[in-house]
Length: 213
Image 1 (tube, rainbow, N blue to C red):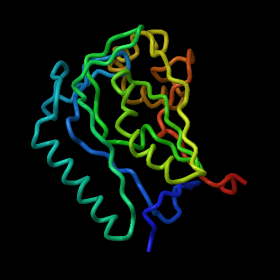
Image 2: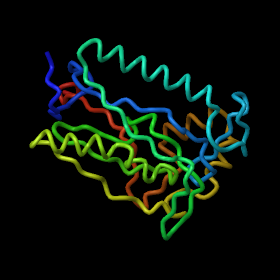
Image 3: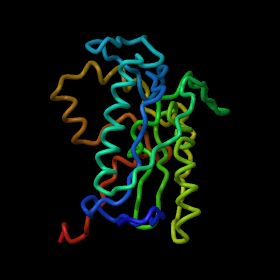
């Protein structure tokens, strides 16, 4: 029987799962346009320019799936932690910029990177996700209180000024053919410049060095 006491220790992607953070879809937003993202999902009823909260039935359906997944894991003895949603319709601002709204706390894998007994808070490249970490702080504070070996660090917070992004990238990207997009991806040509370090935790693969021998 698993203890409810937290022990942070995760080195790879395939060991037996004992504890997990699963997000919530509450108050998820189609964020106002920013340099890193401009949503255009016309086939799903969200053409460019349609912003704000997702429809309630869509959020309810997403939460039902997340809740059912949580219950399924718990029935197998896995401890599930859930974030505390914010009011994601709020404006976010720094001395450098103002962002009209946030996104949500549905995908914790983008923000939190476990490495051994440490969890690293990723930098995130969206202004709309700049303070998303607040949804997870109660969980991390609990881990910190329960596990004396737990380390929690935040990567340097990026400024996300205009210099962080390649000018006109999103506009130019939409004009490319599929083959041109694939070539750019192979060449690692993305929207971010090298002005400051930016990464999502989901971009990191943790695996044994023996795989590369």
